[in-house]
Length: 227
Image (cartoon, rainbow, N blue to C red; front, side, top):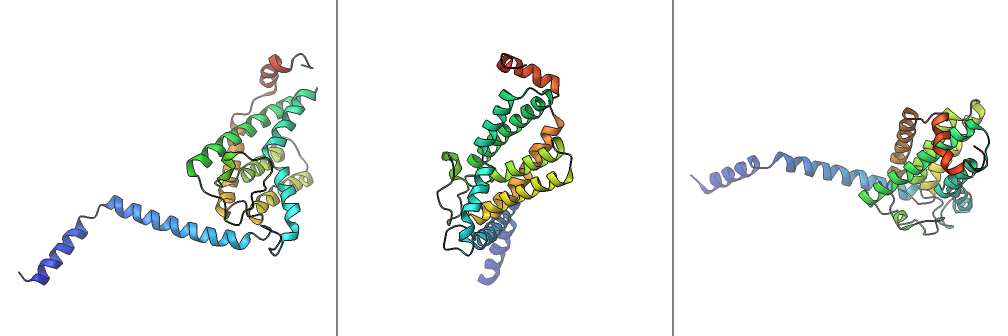
Protein backbone atom coordinates (compact mmCIF):
# COMPACT_ATOMS: atom_id res chain seq x y z
CA UNK A 1 0.00 0.00 0.00
CA UNK A 2 1.40 3.38 -1.01
CA UNK A 3 1.95 6.27 1.39
CA UNK A 4 -0.82 8.26 -0.29
CA UNK A 5 -3.29 5.43 0.19
CA UNK A 6 -2.33 5.07 3.87
CA UNK A 7 -2.90 8.81 4.45
CA UNK A 8 -6.30 8.64 2.75
CA UNK A 9 -7.26 5.64 4.88
CA UNK A 10 -6.23 7.44 8.09
CA UNK A 11 -8.18 10.53 6.99
CA UNK A 12 -11.31 8.52 6.30
CA UNK A 13 -10.98 6.75 9.66
CA UNK A 14 -10.65 10.05 11.55
CA UNK A 15 -13.72 11.45 9.82
CA UNK A 16 -15.70 8.35 10.75
CA UNK A 17 -14.63 8.74 14.39
CA UNK A 18 -16.04 12.27 14.78
CA UNK A 19 -18.67 12.24 17.53
CA UNK A 20 -22.11 13.36 16.28
CA UNK A 21 -22.61 15.23 19.56
CA UNK A 22 -19.43 17.22 18.92
CA UNK A 23 -20.67 18.10 15.44
CA UNK A 24 -23.96 19.30 16.87
CA UNK A 25 -22.19 21.32 19.56
CA UNK A 26 -19.93 22.97 16.97
CA UNK A 27 -22.92 23.75 14.76
CA UNK A 28 -24.81 25.31 17.69
CA UNK A 29 -21.76 27.32 18.75
CA UNK A 30 -21.28 28.60 15.21
CA UNK A 31 -24.97 29.53 14.95
CA UNK A 32 -24.93 31.35 18.31
CA UNK A 33 -21.79 33.30 17.35
CA UNK A 34 -23.47 34.39 14.12
CA UNK A 35 -26.65 35.44 15.93
CA UNK A 36 -24.67 37.31 18.60
CA UNK A 37 -22.60 39.14 15.97
CA UNK A 38 -25.72 40.25 14.09
CA UNK A 39 -27.39 41.26 17.37
CA UNK A 40 -24.34 43.33 18.42
CA UNK A 41 -24.17 45.13 15.09
CA UNK A 42 -27.90 45.84 15.01
CA UNK A 43 -27.81 47.04 18.63
CA UNK A 44 -24.95 49.41 17.89
CA UNK A 45 -26.80 50.97 14.95
CA UNK A 46 -30.01 51.31 16.97
CA UNK A 47 -28.42 53.06 19.97
CA UNK A 48 -29.42 56.46 18.64
CA UNK A 49 -29.88 58.00 22.10
CA UNK A 50 -26.94 56.30 23.83
CA UNK A 51 -25.23 59.67 24.36
CA UNK A 52 -25.63 63.32 23.45
CA UNK A 53 -23.48 62.93 20.33
CA UNK A 54 -25.69 60.28 18.75
CA UNK A 55 -28.22 61.28 16.03
CA UNK A 56 -31.15 61.34 18.49
CA UNK A 57 -29.15 62.28 21.56
CA UNK A 58 -31.50 65.20 22.29
CA UNK A 59 -34.25 62.65 23.03
CA UNK A 60 -32.22 60.98 25.77
CA UNK A 61 -34.15 62.73 28.64
CA UNK A 62 -37.43 61.41 27.20
CA UNK A 63 -36.00 57.90 26.94
CA UNK A 64 -34.84 58.07 30.56
CA UNK A 65 -38.32 59.24 31.62
CA UNK A 66 -39.75 56.13 29.95
CA UNK A 67 -37.13 54.09 31.79
CA UNK A 68 -38.28 55.42 35.17
CA UNK A 69 -41.95 55.00 34.25
CA UNK A 70 -41.47 51.23 34.01
CA UNK A 71 -39.00 50.75 36.85
CA UNK A 72 -39.92 48.00 39.30
CA UNK A 73 -39.61 50.05 42.51
CA UNK A 74 -42.30 52.66 41.71
CA UNK A 75 -44.66 49.96 40.49
CA UNK A 76 -44.25 47.76 43.56
CA UNK A 77 -44.54 50.59 46.08
CA UNK A 78 -47.43 52.10 44.13
CA UNK A 79 -49.29 48.79 44.26
CA UNK A 80 -48.67 48.50 48.01
CA UNK A 81 -49.98 52.06 48.43
CA UNK A 82 -53.20 51.03 46.68
CA UNK A 83 -53.56 48.08 49.07
CA UNK A 84 -53.15 50.36 52.07
CA UNK A 85 -55.50 53.12 50.93
CA UNK A 86 -58.28 51.51 48.91
CA UNK A 87 -61.69 50.55 50.33
CA UNK A 88 -63.05 48.82 47.22
CA UNK A 89 -62.93 44.98 47.18
CA UNK A 90 -62.40 44.89 43.40
CA UNK A 91 -59.30 47.05 43.80
CA UNK A 92 -57.89 44.61 46.37
CA UNK A 93 -58.25 41.78 43.89
CA UNK A 94 -56.44 43.72 41.15
CA UNK A 95 -53.70 44.99 43.46
CA UNK A 96 -52.93 41.62 45.06
CA UNK A 97 -52.59 39.87 41.72
CA UNK A 98 -50.57 42.74 40.32
CA UNK A 99 -48.18 42.66 43.28
CA UNK A 100 -47.72 38.92 42.88
CA UNK A 101 -46.82 39.15 39.20
CA UNK A 102 -44.54 42.16 39.78
CA UNK A 103 -42.57 40.30 42.44
CA UNK A 104 -42.54 37.16 40.30
CA UNK A 105 -41.18 39.18 37.39
CA UNK A 106 -38.31 40.51 39.52
CA UNK A 107 -37.37 37.01 40.64
CA UNK A 108 -37.53 35.51 37.14
CA UNK A 109 -35.47 38.29 35.56
CA UNK A 110 -32.88 38.21 38.36
CA UNK A 111 -32.42 34.44 38.03
CA UNK A 112 -32.05 34.65 34.25
CA UNK A 113 -29.55 37.51 34.49
CA UNK A 114 -27.41 35.43 36.87
CA UNK A 115 -27.74 32.39 34.61
CA UNK A 116 -26.78 34.08 31.32
CA UNK A 117 -24.60 36.96 32.63
CA UNK A 118 -24.66 38.78 29.31
CA UNK A 119 -22.92 42.14 29.49
CA UNK A 120 -24.71 45.31 28.47
CA UNK A 121 -23.81 46.96 25.13
CA UNK A 122 -20.47 48.75 25.10
CA UNK A 123 -22.08 52.12 24.36
CA UNK A 124 -24.35 51.96 27.44
CA UNK A 125 -23.77 54.74 29.99
CA UNK A 126 -23.89 53.78 33.68
CA UNK A 127 -26.53 56.32 34.66
CA UNK A 128 -29.53 54.07 35.19
CA UNK A 129 -32.11 54.83 37.87
CA UNK A 130 -31.93 52.84 41.15
CA UNK A 131 -29.85 49.85 40.10
CA UNK A 132 -28.35 46.92 42.02
CA UNK A 133 -25.41 44.67 41.18
CA UNK A 134 -27.55 42.27 39.15
CA UNK A 135 -28.41 45.12 36.79
CA UNK A 136 -24.92 44.97 35.31
CA UNK A 137 -26.21 42.09 33.21
CA UNK A 138 -28.41 42.62 30.18
CA UNK A 139 -30.36 39.46 29.36
CA UNK A 140 -33.29 39.63 29.53
CA UNK A 141 -34.50 43.23 29.70
CA UNK A 142 -36.48 43.61 32.92
CA UNK A 143 -38.16 46.75 31.60
CA UNK A 144 -39.33 44.82 28.53
CA UNK A 145 -40.71 41.92 30.59
CA UNK A 146 -42.51 44.35 32.90
CA UNK A 147 -43.86 46.57 30.09
CA UNK A 148 -45.27 43.61 28.15
CA UNK A 149 -46.75 42.04 31.26
CA UNK A 150 -48.34 45.31 32.44
CA UNK A 151 -49.78 46.05 29.01
CA UNK A 152 -51.54 42.69 28.93
CA UNK A 153 -52.55 42.96 32.59
CA UNK A 154 -54.28 46.34 32.32
CA UNK A 155 -55.77 45.68 28.90
CA UNK A 156 -57.29 42.37 30.04
CA UNK A 157 -58.11 42.92 33.72
CA UNK A 158 -58.57 46.65 34.33
CA UNK A 159 -59.62 48.73 31.34
CA UNK A 160 -62.40 47.94 28.90
CA UNK A 161 -62.32 50.85 26.41
CA UNK A 162 -60.19 50.52 23.30
CA UNK A 163 -58.66 53.99 23.60
CA UNK A 164 -57.12 53.32 27.01
CA UNK A 165 -55.88 49.92 25.89
CA UNK A 166 -54.26 51.60 22.90
CA UNK A 167 -52.48 54.15 25.10
CA UNK A 168 -51.14 51.40 27.38
CA UNK A 169 -49.93 49.38 24.40
CA UNK A 170 -48.15 52.42 22.96
CA UNK A 171 -46.51 53.13 26.31
CA UNK A 172 -45.26 49.54 26.55
CA UNK A 173 -43.97 49.64 22.98
CA UNK A 174 -42.09 52.91 23.56
CA UNK A 175 -40.58 51.58 26.80
CA UNK A 176 -39.26 48.53 24.96
CA UNK A 177 -37.88 50.65 22.11
CA UNK A 178 -36.20 53.01 24.57
CA UNK A 179 -34.08 50.16 25.99
CA UNK A 180 -32.29 49.75 22.66
CA UNK A 181 -32.28 53.46 21.78
CA UNK A 182 -30.62 54.27 25.11
CA UNK A 183 -28.06 51.53 24.58
CA UNK A 184 -29.17 49.74 27.74
CA UNK A 185 -29.91 46.44 26.01
CA UNK A 186 -29.25 44.40 22.92
CA UNK A 187 -32.14 43.85 20.55
CA UNK A 188 -32.48 40.19 21.57
CA UNK A 189 -32.57 41.15 25.26
CA UNK A 190 -35.71 43.17 24.56
CA UNK A 191 -37.37 40.68 22.21
CA UNK A 192 -36.96 37.82 24.67
CA UNK A 193 -38.05 40.15 27.49
CA UNK A 194 -41.33 40.82 25.69
CA UNK A 195 -41.94 37.08 25.24
CA UNK A 196 -41.19 36.41 28.91
CA UNK A 197 -43.51 39.23 30.03
CA UNK A 198 -46.39 37.87 27.96
CA UNK A 199 -45.80 34.39 29.39
CA UNK A 200 -45.83 35.82 32.92
CA UNK A 201 -49.26 37.31 32.38
CA UNK A 202 -50.58 34.11 30.80
CA UNK A 203 -49.49 32.14 33.87
CA UNK A 204 -51.05 34.75 36.19
CA UNK A 205 -54.32 34.57 34.24
CA UNK A 206 -54.39 30.80 34.74
CA UNK A 207 -53.85 31.10 38.50
CA UNK A 208 -55.70 34.37 39.12
CA UNK A 209 -56.58 34.81 42.79
CA UNK A 210 -60.30 35.57 43.27
CA UNK A 211 -61.54 38.48 45.35
CA UNK A 212 -62.46 36.58 48.52
CA UNK A 213 -59.10 34.83 48.65
CA UNK A 214 -57.32 38.18 48.22
CA UNK A 215 -59.30 39.67 51.11
CA UNK A 216 -58.47 36.66 53.27
CA UNK A 217 -54.77 37.00 52.49
CA UNK A 218 -54.78 40.71 53.34
CA UNK A 219 -56.79 40.44 56.54
CA UNK A 220 -53.79 39.74 58.87
CA UNK A 221 -51.79 42.61 57.37
CA UNK A 222 -54.30 45.35 56.58
CA UNK A 223 -57.38 44.38 58.57
CA UNK A 224 -56.78 47.12 61.12
CA UNK A 225 -56.87 49.69 58.30
CA UNK A 226 -60.06 49.05 56.40
CA UNK A 227 -60.96 45.40 55.73
